[in-house]
Length: 277
Image (cartoon, rainbow, N blue to C red; front, side):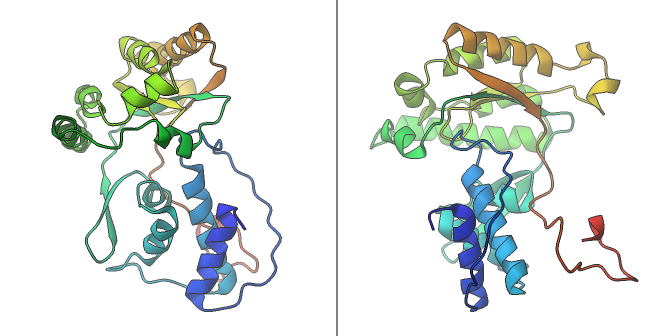
């Protein structure tokens, strides 16, 4: 019952006002668990969508974003579930009535270079090293950086990303208490050509954004991209600090969660939907 996919399925059946039958689950997850990459949110949304399909229930979207409300109520905030649902970069708030989100543009050619340690980082432990209070100066510092980050993404100004991801509220504390490799890895990534680098979520994954990607990796000259040199620099820092892990290079998906297979198919003889779902 503590599994987030099961939690999501239950929430879907409760929303449909239908009893939940006994179910057998087969899960294939490509998102490393407890690494600051949103695996919990992905599981929640996957469970809700699967449950809605099984229950034969559909939700209103325009003006209510009902799926987001269900997912955010389980997670406690929309920070991760919104990108899972809608794809891309999302910014969300609670307007006093419900959760609302908006998409932030993703600059073309930008890639995500992630150093994913072999050890897990529990969110509860990562929160335990944070301060109970935040100074006015630190709050003002972070608010300004968030505004700068969104502005840089909206304009596609990758050079300004490194200023936008600066932080005083959680990275210094977590670097000191949990992840001593964090700031040396950020420095190495940026010196090797990364637009910026930061702690992903509560960690322990360190993520860098790079530019220059165009088309398939096999069709573009390596010197036109910075992902390889940045990945190499990050791995060297990891080895220096004795942190075992791996590098994953990918791009932000602009598409959110979707059903890829269902029996019987939703498509008909005359209307074929994507993947013949």
